[in-house]
Image (tube, rainbow, N blue to C red):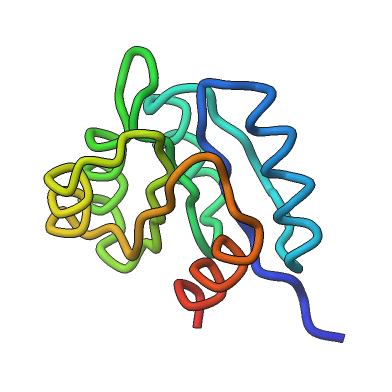
Length: 122
């Protein structure tokens, strides 16, 4: 039996984290940790070293772009997928330039999330 890829789920909405965790489980991923802001995301990444991070852009204290930069500064091979309701092309391009593997829009489409996250960990 192969182990399931691990995910760190970062979003300030607890309801979204609960919904996404169920969807991730259905897609064959194991949520190893959750974070409600960017500081927690960076700390959880250091402690857990997940296969992929699903990161909201708009979070209190430290946003997703800042957390993305800090995680990649520690681990340039980190696989981070941005998740946000912000759909501006400039936001997408900026995150990809910073090193995000991909970008998902809210509300989450489970089939798209499944494909994008499996591509990120491949």
